[in-house]
Length: 160
Image (cartoon, rainbow, N blue to C red; front, side, top):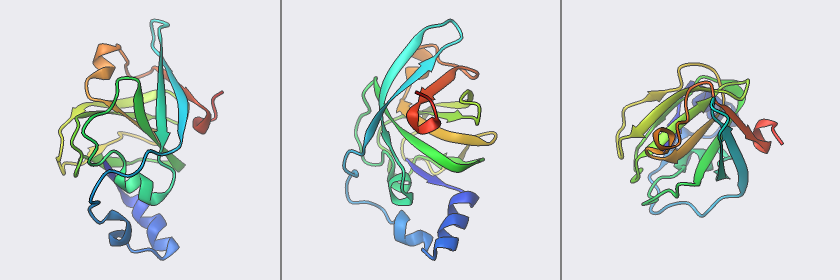
């Protein structure tokens, strides 16, 4: 999944890096990134545990889960947004359907795009200011009954 938006383009412009330098189509998926545990507590009290890769650099965030054929049910990728801002994602070169979970500054889910369509260039907006975006296996939020308002906890988000 490739992330784009005004905040990212502004950051790249300030850094003197042309957007094309980091958004060229990759020839294969990026190597597995550093991982961290993440949990989501649903409104019914059920806690779901994931091990997520951390997309920290602009290049890691631009390539995301592109060209990965599958995403495990207990895995995903976290895109911290520093500083917090509204964002948009798209599914360019993304093979597997994904659930895109937008996490507000209070650590609660503010919106979910379920089963984002592989390869689509249609922008998927966060719907508000986010601290991070979480990509999960397509359909897992419905299967696990993860909803807007549920709490996300991970060290990269200030959680323990």
